[in-house]
Length: 313
Image 1: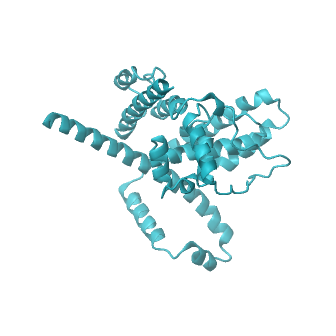
Image 2: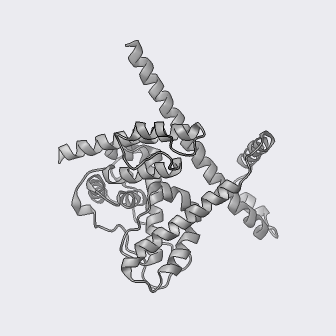
Image 3: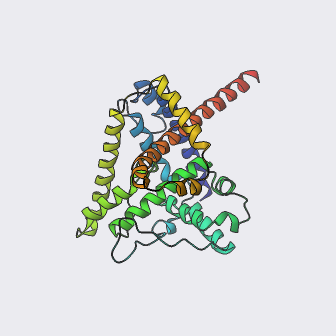
């Protein structure tokens, strides 16, 4: 078992290196995988080939990472975290919040995460909603996931987003099967989850159980294609527009708290919502992209520092 765990960790480390290479290519402005990049990754993954988009390549690597993130016990592979809601569903079915886990429950769930071969993201979501880190004496979620699973804070939140998307689509389809949605794909559609879930609910109604995973995959694929098309149609910002963006963000950051501001809005509520909601989605995409670039820059700096240390030694 220990030998297999070491192999999985080594595999995860190599795939993390693939992500670094792909993110560097993305920061250089490359939209597709070059022959040189594909050759660099070939020893670690055969799924990334020259000519495929950088975005699809990153998704492929995330998909390969999923089974080797933590442990390898078969008992957690089929344990659903949360069954789909029974009865009629609304456009968004809200589940009651989990009660905080006690120490024994948190330790048991943590061990299940460590040994899971599949659905790590939904188990991790259960740990987050049950505040497992507090039950085990950790001061923060970040310390918990780093100490227990070797996950970075940003990677843990990617997995939490993936878990939320999977649970919501599972519930929308009224299925006990886990939809196959990668962390990268979940990050792309999370701001449009209501629309995706509504479409899944409509298309899966009356369909046999064995058709449901394929239907969900089709809906997710179509939504991502629509998002790619809409991004492609957006004009590139000019320097003056970037200055306006910076000023707008500064203005928002200096506003009174949201409750006070909302109290000042009266007749204009519907109009403001119609503008604010798409703006919020766009800002979320911007923050996610800036974080991705910052992570890649930090990884480059770390690699450069390691190289300089090795040369100096």
